[in-house]
Image (cartoon, rainbow, N blue to C red; front, side):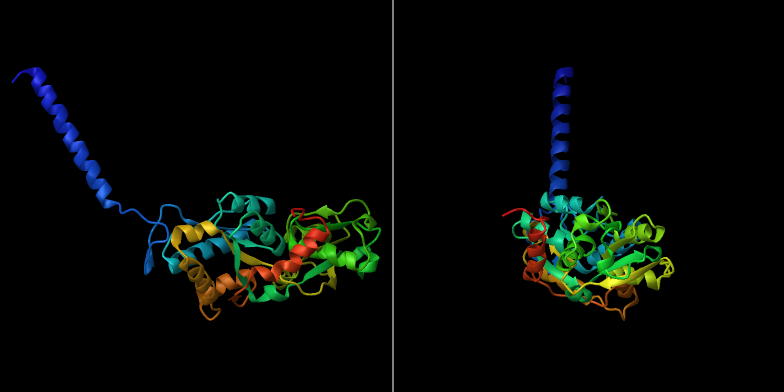
Length: 311
């Protein structure tokens, strides 16, 4: 057998072996059709990506949503991953471009996200979110004891896009005839509810507004110096936080995924120690159904004060 012939024969033997291996690997990987289910959810390459507005201490958020991701993965039978974001605007942008699938939003950011993604819907909220309130706090050395005392003092909101730390507090200030121009200098934006407490306690601002649930939680944890900072006003009730689901999730997993996520959230029970840890971090007893229409008032207020300008 000549050398050229042997090289030719070895080439085709290697080609045949390579083709057999390639075909074998292909046969081992079953294609996943969008929306296909078989009782247990089919595995897809990309995980369900959850996120949340960064309204509190990042370490607490990482702990909470790490637990939520693990819980949902177990209940749904699909990979779930928590992806933190840098600020409120980033949560809306990430949702808009499809990087985030299921996001825990405040009332305003939830409206902003849904306006930018047709087919996105609010699917669940905590029991406390249908009657949510904000609190106004003041440094005790400021002499502030009512909203009418605020003009001429320094003041800070939370994030610029926060419902409970900016939108509704500004709305209720206007309802009391107080404009932002009445403050001493421009109002600040601390970035989070925890930071608002810190700044007012330190005297960097005379007063501020924040999420009542965060305030009450920090009080219970003994993390508020009540000799230096106190609540002087609590707002009327409004709808606030909720989960918003991206429509691409339905395209990937089928219509039933909406109900399955809701059922998993509604199943959280404070009598179960593992569930209780999640609910305690959320400051709630349970999750309940919600719908887009519940946030119509939030959208109207946001348009009124210029935080939503789209038609």
